[in-house]
Amino acid sequence: EPLQIDAWMQSLVDRVSARASAKEITVSLSMPQTVALVEADPLRLEQALINVLDNAVRYTMPGGKVSVEVVQKGDFLYFQVSDSGMGIPRKELPYIWNRLYRVEKSRSRVRGGSGLGLAIVKQVIEAHGGFVSAQSEEGAGTVITLGIPLRSHETTRGERT
Ligand code: ATP
Ligand code: MG
Image (cartoon, rainbow, N blue to C red; front, side, top):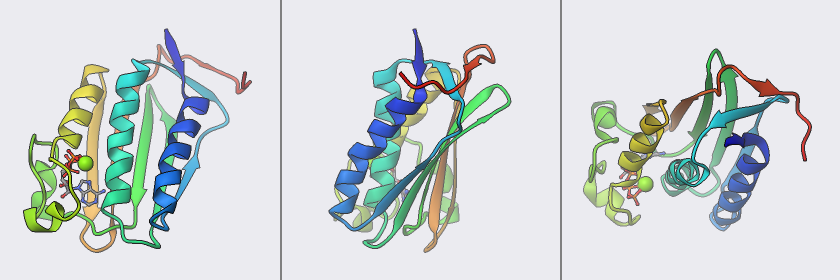
C-alpha cells in the first residue's frame, strides 16, 4: 500500500522538534505542494528518518538548526536533513554508514549511541530500492540525503485527508 508522505512526515518532525527544543534547536520542514506516493514500509522508513534526525539533533550544539526538505525530482523522492552542527571530517565521511563506526570515539561517547544508526538507515533505504549520501564540513554542518523511488512516477494533487 502506498504511503502518503506529507502528514506522516509532519508528525515525525513534530516528534523530533519536541525533543530538539529541549536543546534549543529548531527543526524546520519544507515539502512540495504535491503529495508524493511511495511504495514503502512506513515503520521501516520512519526508523530510518528518525535515526537521521536524531543524529542531526545529537551532533548539533544548542542554538543550532536542523532543516528537513522533501524534494521530488525525476523518479525519486529525496529526504534531505541538514544541520548546523559539528560536521564530520572529510576522511571519516565514507565510513559513517558502517556498522559500529563512530567519528572520534571520545567525542561521541559523551553523546551516547552505538554506531548502528546509519548502518540501519542505509540498509532500510537500499531495501526500498533507494540510496543514501552524506556531505559535511567540519565545524559547519552535515547534510544527509535519502532517496527512494517514487511509485511508478505517480503523484496526486495535494488534497489532505
Ligand atoms: P546510534 O547507534 O545511537 O545512532 P551513533 O549516532 O554514534 O549511534 P550513527 O548514527 O551510525 O551512530 O552515526 C555514526 C557516526 O557518524 C556518529 O558516531 C557521529 O560521529 C557521526 N555522525 C552521524 N551523523 C552526524 C551528524 N549529523 N553530524 C555530525 N556527525 C554525525
Ligand atoms: Mg545515530
